[in-house]
Image (cartoon, rainbow, N blue to C red):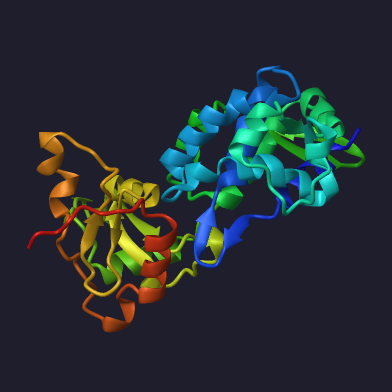
Length: 316
């Protein structure tokens, strides 16, 4: 059986499914779903058909456009990561012995009742080490997703993050403690909010309590954990609501005109038309300093990687 540290390192070593500018969260979402199954004491292996719909729903909500159509890929390709040391497959030998690049389609996985789950050594360690499941979930969430979405993703994947969860090696033993909160540098936030004159660049929200801005956040246009730098051209000053919507891909900012573009997947009632979506087609408030304005390369990344296309047609 693997040690807890070896299991944590295995989760950290998964190859992200990332091609060009596009970010594909298929593997991390499947890992979180599977961690939730372990946490609930469900069987080690699950047929693709058992988890297909839940993975599809996660990709629809938290993935880029059309990512749900490739929901079968992580189920197959996780087996090739780390030489199969993390993910295990069960099914007809003729199918499993295919070259890794010869990926079965969704119909083949269904018809052949292919099942997947953690390798027996990993599964045994996860089930026998208190807090290790939550520790691995924290690692996946912090590595692959922005802070605005982590709790929502964990809830949708049915992973309990509240239990004591960090497994640390000390003098040959393993200790379970509460995970340390990651400290975020306030410098990036301060610089971005100052560049936008302490207001949301979409709706103009600028509430202060005394001299302290309230409900304003510095959003990374290109997410920090995929290489987005802590510089003003990669930041937007957004109220908490628009920050969440931005990271969900409900809207983006057009790289040339700086107009707000809402996704056609964002559906709202009449109140929405006088709320968040009233800003569709309007230019954001821009920093006076040209050097602090959003860079096209970061806005293009967000539009191609996070935004749920297509956007609503602009008539004016």
